[in-house]
Length: 322
Image 1 (cartoon, rainbow, N blue to C red):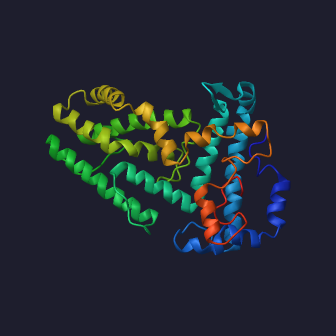
Image 2 (cartoon, rainbow, N blue to C red):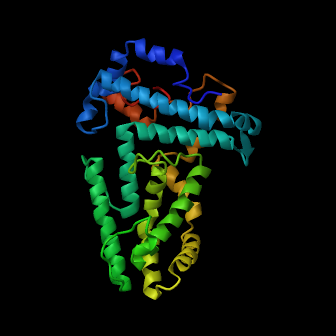
Image 3 (cartoon, one colour):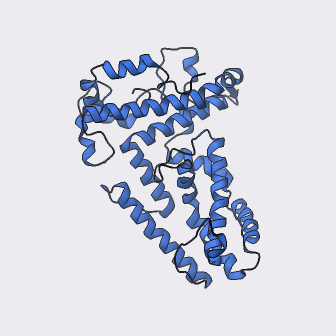
C-alpha cells in the first residue's frame, strides 16, 4: 500500500515538473496579486509550483492514509435513505470533511475567512478588513488576557500572568495549575470530537506546525466561556486537592454547556460545511454527468468569475478543480 499517493507516484511528479502551467497558474492565482495581502500566497510561477507540490503532497498523504483505508467500509455501508433523505456513508462524510479542511488550510484567502469566523465566534465582534494573521493573533491575546483579568477580579483570585512549566508541575501557582488541568481536559474532549468527525487534529488555521494545531483552534473557542472562569472559581473555593476538583468540575461544566453536542456543528459552521452539501450528490449515483455542489464552484465564487469576466475556473477554483 502506498504511503503517499503523490510522492510515491513518479508519473504524477513528472507531469507536475514538466508541464508548462504558467497560464493556468496565472489564472488560478489571479496574477499573484494576493501575495500583497497574504504573505503565504504564491508570489510568482516558481513559488506557485512549489505551493502546489506541497498541496499535492498533503493531499496524497490524506488519500493514502485516511481515505483509502476506509474505502471498503464506505462501499459496504453505502448511502442511507431515511425519512425521505439520502446521506453518504460515514466514511465518505469523514473523507469530505477532511478534504474540505485541507482545502481551506491550503488557500490563504479561505483560511483567513475561517480565522475571522473563529474570532467572531469567540468574542462576538467583527474585525476590520485587511488584518493579517499575526495582527489577529495579537488581538486575540489581548482579549484572552482581559478574560483572565476579569475572572481574577470576579473571584478574588490574584493573577500574575499565565505561567507554567510542564517539567515542573508543582512550581506553578494554584490558578495556573487549575487552568492547565482544565485546558488539558478541554483539549482531550475537542480532540475526540475532531477525530469522530473525520477531521485532522493537525491541520490548524490559527495554530500551525503542531500535531494538535486544530485541537488548539477548537478548544480556544470555549476557554473564555468555560474553562477560564471555572479554574478561577475552583481556586477561589479552595486550593486543596486542586486537580481532582478541577476534573470533577470540568465534567459537570462540559455536560452543562453541552460541549460534545456543540463541537462538530461548530466545526461544520466555521469551515462552511452545510448539511445541504454533506447530503447532496446522491443523484449523481444514477446520473454520473449531473453536476453536484461537491465538485462545482460555490455561488459566491461563480459570482466572482462573472464580475471578472472569466469563463474558466479562475481564482475561485476549489481543491477538487486544482
